[in-house]
Image 1 (cartoon, rainbow, N blue to C red):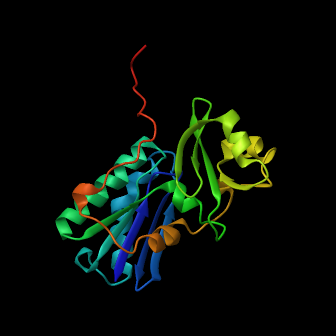
Image 2 (cartoon, helix red, strand yellow):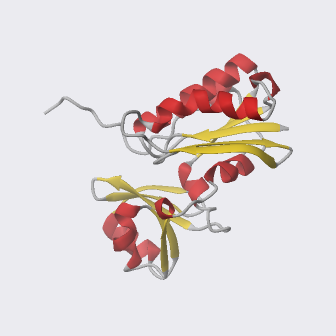
Length: 203
């Protein structure tokens, strides 16, 4: 089975292509100062498929991050996943960024990501929601936690170990690929917005 996995929800775009559970192509893209990293998603997918000697018609399953994360990034990858799955008549699998990050140290770690407004998105085997930071301090007490740069210092004071996924070269595409062994119809793929999207231009 050939699985195409991609994500633009976090602070970079990553894409991984596997055949029978073996990664045969992957790439990570950072924003270049002119364009947001998600702008390169389609062209990079085409490039990875070409290098592997494959075409879109060879793909059996698409996997994508559905959030939480950048609202623009969530919309970009879920839209691309839905369109590809519809056009190719294949299944698609949506996975939370929180579940993906829980696997970066080889286990099922607690994950806390900055949700702004003095809250954090919390995952502990399941999504607990956007929780006030004072409560998050208690949840991480004595535990290892995967977090981001903005919460690293705060959570380091409470956790047994705090790891920022942004400070390591973790194989997020490969992890997403492994988490996606079955899928659903494209119509059922929905973005995961734990909090409402921000509304700009209002006082």
